[in-house]
Amino acid sequence: MDNTPLSPWKYFGLEILYSIPIIGLIFLICHAIGASNINKRNFARSYFCFVVVVLVVILVVFLISNGTGLIQRIVDAIKGV
Image (cartoon, rainbow, N blue to C red; front, side, top):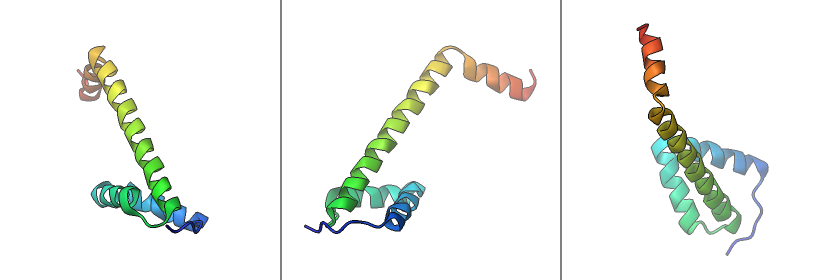
């Protein structure tokens, strides 16, 4: 197990890598499961938790706005109806 600390630039690079839609998710899962550096593995796991929380919040906001008819009003306003 490698305990070498990651530099701030490596963290920055990993964030950019994980932000790429499909490829980033693949790297994120690979690093979260099998990275030899424990710091990289923990960062990937925390980033994965962040992604899950953001997706849940977006889903809740969408369901609430859809249930109240807000989305339909926005679409009607855009169409000019």
